[in-house]
Length: 137
Image (cartoon, rainbow, N blue to C red; front, side, top):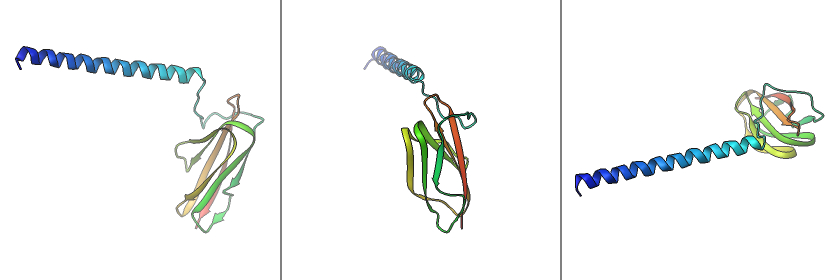
């Protein structure tokens, strides 16, 4: 292959890569626009407000457990837009949408004291929270 042909081929590859990159950026922009338009809003742990919705933590309880195998179960008084929890100050993880309860089985906690923050948001995006502190010995 001649040097001139090789340069043309390299230029075509660069243009093709640039076009692919631009398509990816445009697709991402469309995705972000759609998400914003449907009102997706992650649960913000710092913003809580009054809501008619209430949550009850059924498990774990504020007590000491002899085993690390603990179930998480929380129930809302009405349908929640979203329910989530944060374990020991970690990332807030959404467990369900349009639900009034969820349970996580077979969670194994290390020995020590643990705190779980439970969150629920109503359909007006008002967020309520409750927490539980328990110990594994």
